[in-house]
Length: 84
Image (cartoon, rainbow, N blue to C red; front, top):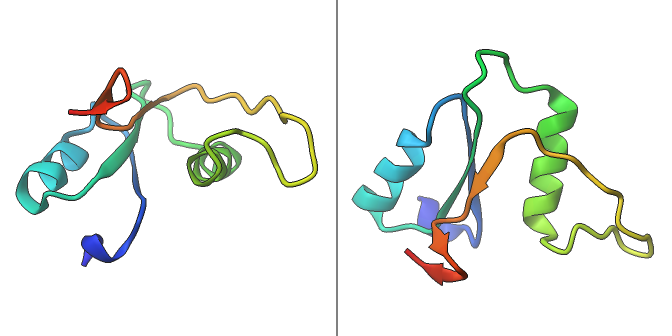
């Protein structure tokens, strides 16, 4: 089912175990947004992460960089731009 999508982003309140499992078991390219602070994600934070993931330049159409700030970590499964 996940193979139908060009991009898959998993928000996780841990160190990315679900994304690791999905990569290993189903061989899909999964990005993981992780945070281990004990506080839940806020809707606006996840919205910004999803928008940044869909538009990696961070630019909205016709606008300058919005300066979105992410307090978590997005793991793209790549090391120096090369898939891991």
